[in-house]
Length: 325
Image (cartoon, rainbow, N blue to C red; front, top):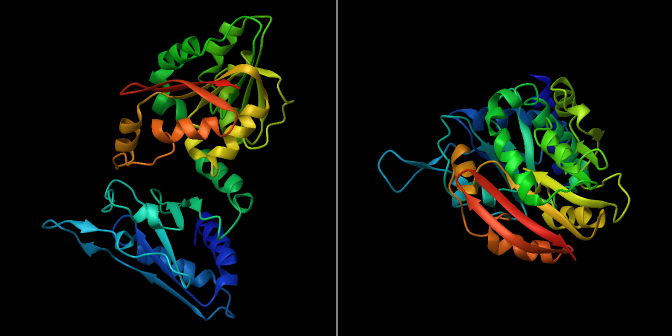
């Protein structure tokens, strides 16, 4: 069994074992993926955990001819049942539906040899048990090819930096900086009297930033966005590209960003494509109640020390600007 599969199934077995007896239902993924993952998960439980039943549900016939739907779209979580959803690859049958939203465990399974836990319900485990290591595994596998895949959006980063209002002398944090695509523009705007820090929790992403020469533009720091190694009220502008929707608790994450920002400082939440385009890339459509929707993001910001100033969600850019209260 590949090491990464063993790590994920061992973590899940450790988290779920205290809840036995229990039925775990695995669905989603490409054809055959649920059965294979269910077998590997069952094998991860110790011999003493024989009160377990791990099932693979291979899909239900949907409303249209030849269509499939995830069984998780109709099953409800129960005290003696845990639902596991596999996000699949190009042949994924269950791109739509509520299966993922109903599941207590969501696993990125686009590469069956490199599964990564992307969501674990807090009733099962505190995020500190899984979030950092699993997110690092997710992004580490993508770091080397990140710029080659997305490098053509650099002008969009530069325009977002301009709109964020970075000025000479500003202290700027790029939180979740990845390979540092925003750092040259942030450094140019802050000038020689300013200071720019690029923070990310994946060593491979920071190494890719160094290889691209972006450590000339900023100080690179290995850090978790949920616990920034930065003094309170010390920052003028925070640039957060593709960050907030990855946080296990967006409200707490936004509050940590507010902690390090001076009153009147600015938060720029950015993505180089709109929300609908990003969802389509992952084989789904937007649904009501998503954290980055305007109706949800406004209250999240106001509840964490910010005031939403502007909100733009167009095909080639998502940009929300907020002021620190």
